[in-house]
Each structure stands twice: as C-alpha cells, then as structure tokens.
Length: 285
Image 1 (tube, rainbow, N blue to C red):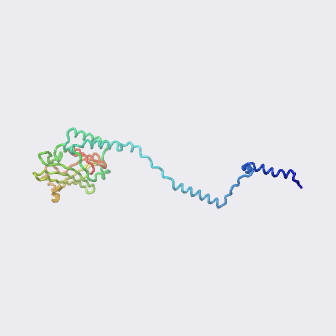
Image 2 (cartoon, helix red, strand yellow; image 1 turned 60 degrees about the horizontal axis):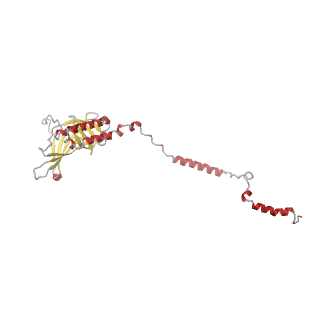
Image 3 (cartoon, rainbow, N blue to C red; image 1 turned 180 degrees about the vertical axis):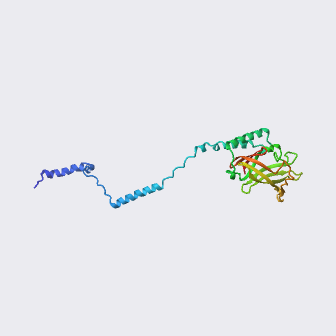
C-alpha cells in the first residue's frame, strides 16, 4: 500500500497542475491522430442532390438571354439616304423659300431651285411608282412652281394673270391624290377683289381630274370639272360647278389633259417635272 510519501501520490497533483497551466489548444487532438469524420450520403440525399442540380440547369436554361440582333448591312450605313438626302432636301426647301411659291422668283432664284432639285433627284435615284404608290396617296401642298414666274395662275398654261391690274390673290395650292379611285384634284384658294366698301370674296376652286400611269414614274391627268365654293363670310352660298367644255369648243392650247413625271418621292416631299418643263415641289400636308 502506498504511503503519503509515495512518489506516485505526490506526482499526481503536480502533474495536474502542470497540465492545467498549458493552453487549451495544446489539449486539442491533431488531425493526424483523429481524422475528420465524413458524412456518408444516403440514397435519399443523393436523389435530393441530383434533383437540385437538375433544377439549377433548368432555371439557367430558362433565363438564358436571346442572342443579340445582327448588325445592319454595311451598305445601309453608307447609303446616301442616311446622311446625304436630308441635307439635299433642306437645300431645296431653302432655295424655294421666300419666293411666294415662284410668283416672286427672279432668274437667279429659278437657277438655284433648279440646281438644288437636280442634286436631290440624282441622289434619290429613279422613282418606281409601282413600288412607292402608297407614298403618292394623300394631300400635298405646293410650295414652289417654276411656271408661276410667268406671272399667270396657269403657269405656262392659259390662266388669269397676276398683278395689280387684276385683283386676284393666289392663296394656298394643294393636290389631293387618291390612288384607289384615281382621283387627282388641284385645290386653289383665291381672293377676289370687290369694289369698296365690299370685302374681298374668298373662294376655293377644285379642279377635278382622273389620272393614269403612262410609265414607271409618269402620270397623265385628264380634266373633268371645276367646282368653286365660297368661303369666309359667303360660305353659306352653294358651290358653283363648271363642267368640262366639249372637245370641239376647247382651244388647242388647252386640251384638258397633261402629263408630268415624279422625279423624287418620299414620305414628306415630292418633286415633279411637267410636260412643259415646269419644276414643282410639294410637301405632305
């Protein structure tokens, strides 16, 4: 039996004291001595892991963005329509502005308008109305006619003269084109002078035509009748209709028909050349 002076009895408390003074980390077993235990996957866990991976694949496939659109063809970027035509259209509109639709145009004004029109026609290329027929449809406002420089309302054709001797003031001029019924109407606003103290008489004259195509860009119009309607203070008066004169009574200088060629056409501007050399510029109204 061990006594109080037995070495084993005396060393036990001292041994405990030494171990208690050592840091706690020294008492933790090392990995080499006690390797980590890995959790074994059961059949249920494997199926759950596979289903989660499948769901992730389905979601990633569903939210995959569509491919970007292809870039525009290089010829479209370099096409004159993207950068040249707007400038040429502006040049033509500037050339025909301030000349009262051509009634106040000088020789220099006529040359500037002709040059600007030729540049726009060359850049736009030939017109094919079989493809662009829908662009012809609608109401167009005349902003320039080189024929008005002759100082007559008929241009190079017979028409009343303009000036102080005849109290007729030309207002707005429109063309109304219906590609389905083949109606082609020239609509002219006029102001007729009256003896003082009567106010001037405002009327709208509609020259009705039918049109047909004689080429890819050429149009022939045939006159049918003229309707004159009072506006302003006399708008209550009924319209006055003037039928077409019989061919036997019609002067040779006014056959009742005419032709013109559309030399430029887009969604908002139209340029035409008449059969007597008239240059006309219209904007969509």
